[in-house]
Amino acid sequence: MSLGVLNNISAIYAQNNLNSTQAALSKTLQQLSSGSRINSGADDAAGLSLANGLQASATALSQSARNASEGVDMLQVADGALAQITNLLNRAVTLATEASNGTMNTAQISAANAEYKNILGEITNINSNTEYNGIASFNKASAIYTTDGTTSQTDNAAALAKVDPTTLALTAAGFTTSGGAQTELGLITTAIGTIATDRGLVGATINTLTAVGNVMSTETTNTLAAQNDVTATDYGQATSDMSKYQILSQTGIAALSQANQSQQLITKLLQ
Image (cartoon, one colour):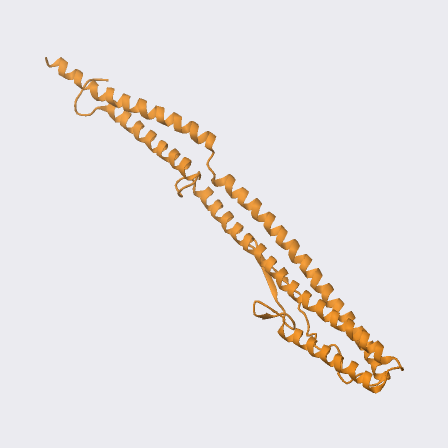
C-alpha cells in the first residue's frame, strides 16, 4: 500500500472494527444488566414476537386460575347454605315424626307446627339472602370464564334453583293433625333428597373448577418457562462475550493509535 495523507485507510479499518466491537460490548452489557437477551426488536424480532405472545398467554392463564378459584369460593358459599337447609329439614323430620304420633294432644301438635313454620321461614331467608360478592347464590346461573389467551373455555358454575318452601313443596299448614304431619313428612324427605342432589351438583362443579384451576396454574408455569428460554440472558455466554469484546476494544484502540501514528512516517520522507 502506498503512503499518502488524503485517507488513512488503516485508521478507517481500525475505527470501523472498534465501532463494531463497542456496539457488541454495549449490547452484551445491556443483556447482563437487564437479564434479558432481547431488549429491543432489533435484537431478535421473531423472538420478541414469540416472547410477547407467551407473556400474554401466561397473564391470561394466571387470571383464569384465579377466576376458577373465585368460582369455587362462590359455590362453597352456596354449599354451606344448602348444608344449613339440610340441618333445618332434619329438624323438620323430627317435628313431623313427633306430630304424626297419636299420643300428642292438639296443643303439642300446634307447638310443633309453630316451630315448623319458623323452619320454613328460615329456609326462605337463606334462599333470598345467600350471596357472593353481591350476587345471589340461588336461582341464578353463573359462568366461570377461563382462557389460555387464544381459545376460551366457559366452565358453568352450578345453576342452583330456588330452595324456598314453595319450590320444595312444603306447606306451613301441612301437619296441624297427625295425618297431615305424616303427609308433610313425606314431602320433607323428598325435599332433603332434592337438596342432596343440588349439593352433589355443587360438589361436582367445585371439583371441575378446582381441576381447571390446577391445569391453568401448571400451564402458566410452563408458559413462563418457555418465555424465559426465549428471552433470558445466557450469563455463561454473555460473560464470555464481554471478556472477548473488552479485549478486542483494548486492542482496537491500540491498533487505531498505531494507524494514526503511521501517518507520521510521511514527515520523515520530507526531512
